[in-house]
Length: 215
Image (cartoon, rainbow, N blue to C red):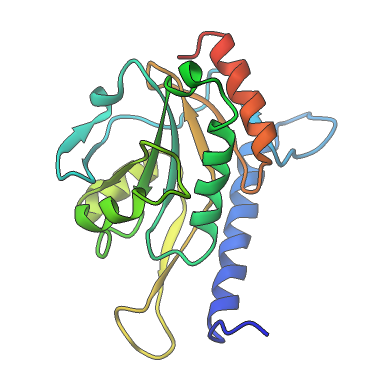
């Protein structure tokens, strides 16, 4: 039997609801005969996702979108105290990237942007992104609550703080959408991967993206 606290499952259920709503908003297109797709979604070139940002990387260095010019990015918004969804998504990203040839793998920069800047300091992010379970070279980005909110808004990320029923102010979790974004070498939105996209499917899509000159 699971030893998760009783408040855990409602939180996860709420998070999955946000994921489902967000995925539908991104995927459903007017007139699409087959309904929503739950895997990779490709941009028509008009999606307003992404934009300028100023954040702090896990080494403590202030960075902007200009620091990533010339490399494609796989971006995930999450937090280091996330019990399940975030580690799962980063592991999927890792498995997908590992299926690429080394020279192609080097053309894509994996990035984790926290939506919990209160706890996710640069030092905390450094410990987290160094996990062997996550993509090699994963960069962690944090910042002030205002900087994080601005970045999240640019990528249309939905998140909210959920307090622990015990009243412990440090035991809260973050309810958030779980989407992996692919940005091209110019910093423009290319496509998204819904939560739970199989690694092989993601890898094949990344390879197509690279072959088409996205990075």
